[in-house]
Length: 279
Ligand SMILES: Nc1ncnc2c1ncn2[C@@H]1O[C@H](COP(=O)(O)OP(=O)(O)OP(=O)(O)O)[C@@H](O)[C@H]1O
Ligand SMILES: [Mg+2]
Image (cartoon, rainbow, N blue to C red; front, side):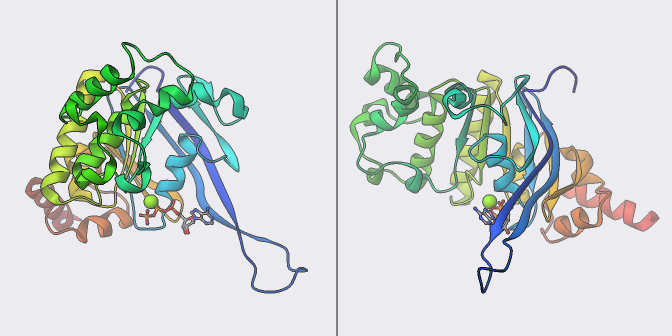
């Protein structure tokens, strides 16, 4: 891809202090969760971060959205370095990059109506709500395939899939250029997963946002990703176009990851077998 990426991450490092077992004299140890990660995300692109549990996917996403601070490295959002921005300037970042999390219920306030939930990002940023709060919330619900009359309901009155649609509606409220989905469909049934993936794809076609999509399930990734970055132990070991990475994995770790999934797509399986036979 050419042109300025929406999101450019370079050499991201995140270290967490690890609680020592004994004694104040022992220096605090550091655990490196993300260890030199770089990637570009362009408009209309869906970059999937894949890798085993604990490989640093969520930490990378949180760094990219400036939900946590980097130990070192840079994140440029639409050309601007957001890693060093003071707290007071983060409102603009929140309007540009939004995050959808894994568990819809724990990310929706159970005591707030849907109207209040989906308009919260605008109110938090002290922005005018075009057309008024209720009409705006209704329009958002319609866009994510929910009945607009449900704006007065509470989260407990929804199914998991519906609740995740509300999470997506809230993310869309500010008109983000980048959407980060951290295991956003992982807690859902397979059929509901497919519906949410279709919704994300439709919304992306309409809005043109870039999507950083984190999932451990490669069958889900194959449905939505245009590019893939494979992570293990805090590092990206392989990255590229989805079909190239899945069809002809270069790194041993990627091969093992794919081998663990029973036949995610027959053509890729066939391509891999042919390669393996000639290697
Ligand atoms: N706040 C924290 N303090 C200490 N260690 C952390 C913290 N957040 C994450 N880690 C550690 O960093 C590593 C990477 O975690 P991360 O959540 O990024 O993994 P992940 O790839 O998203 O895994 P999963 O697929 O299970 O969600 C893990 O070993 C985790 O224990
Ligand atoms: Mg995670």
